[in-house]
Amino acid sequence: MIDAKTATTIDRETLTITFQRRFGVARELVFEAWTKPEQVAHWWDPSGTPLAECEIDARPGGAFKFVNRGDAHSPPFAGTYRAVERPSLLVFDALGALGTVRLEIADVGTRMTVTIRCGSEEHLDHFVKLGVADGTDRTLDNLVAYLARA
Image (tube, rainbow, N blue to C red; front, side, top):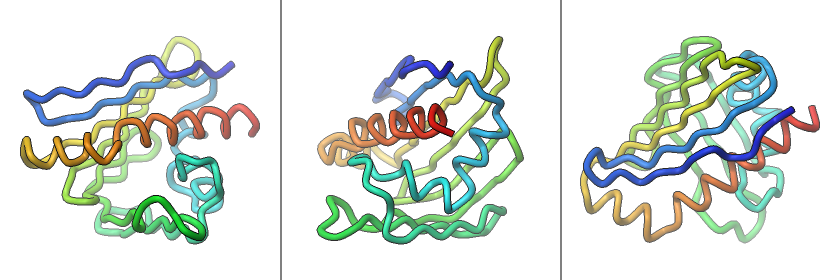
């Protein structure tokens, strides 16, 4: 079984937005859902609409680009991987922030922690104003639903 969201926090002291989820599946499957374009394309957009374009080169220095369909609510999400440690860690730069996806073995399944670290208070405030926390929450809920169907 896959659990719903467990926590989302905005920490102004560390300039981070943190999301946590628990999955009743192996972390290898969660890692693949983050790194295989054919999988990411199905859950990434917060609206639940499949992506128009999804490119992933999952290696340190490799790039990714996710493009929403039609009159999308946001510009393409693109960045570069700093670290890729299968099946436990992704670290990437995107939109001027540092993103981290950490996958840990839990009692049953996987515990996932996603962090977005901003470079300044203004950057964090801008992300909050744009609704990045809510959008990412919906995106990660899509991941939960995607893995439940898989």
